[in-house]
Length: 328
Picture 1: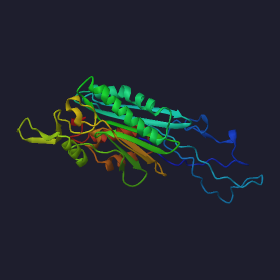
Picture 2: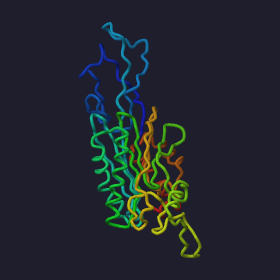
Picture 3: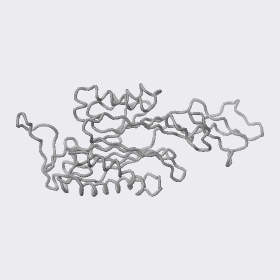
């Protein structure tokens, strides 16, 4: 979860202007001085770009017009939580600085048909993603890197196993206040604003719910049908693609499905809301168990708690539903 909030106390204006080393330092929540432009280690996104209005008492003593109050730069606190039933759900994250811009990257890979594909993506996908971006933290670069990394992982995985994996990558650029998203399958990412309804960042590639994917597969000659119940022999469960019997039309791997699987991800970039936000990236073990509105309510109730406790609370709430843990 990535949280956003204005700091309670702005930094006072400087006399005579802002030049070089006169830039104000940002104090971390741990108390250490991080230096100019360096964000704190903890807590959530904080914006230092929009000036606040000055009061009549905020004046400078050297005949210089007062400067706007300055706020610390945005920061991000990330946390991961999991209840793993089948050993197929994997995640990874990275935090780096490119050209003075801090970028936080999060990955969720939900395997099916075995854990080989998701574990391979956990171990290698973000390395490939960052190498493809080549130090360029702009949104177009990150989206191109997501496409290149997913397609490369697909080529590698189909050569080693018939297992498959969903992929969701969310990259947060703290300098540009942008979220760049790439996804394959049904591991969703949702943005939870400070108030109002949460919004989906990813695209759903389940055959049961995606008319576009059903049309694409049928035009290629793919066979779509429900699996048969072992108890009744009647069609049951979600719509699936055969051979292979996968429920989503986009993924990494699934070699037994062949050319019908599309490893090219859906991509988009959205701005971080001015008031801040939280972002949740999770497998269908969360989203099939509880509504996004319930996730949002859980996070808002944990707003003043560490991100790890908030992430764990979301997982606990999903597990508490009777059917949630059965599907990992």
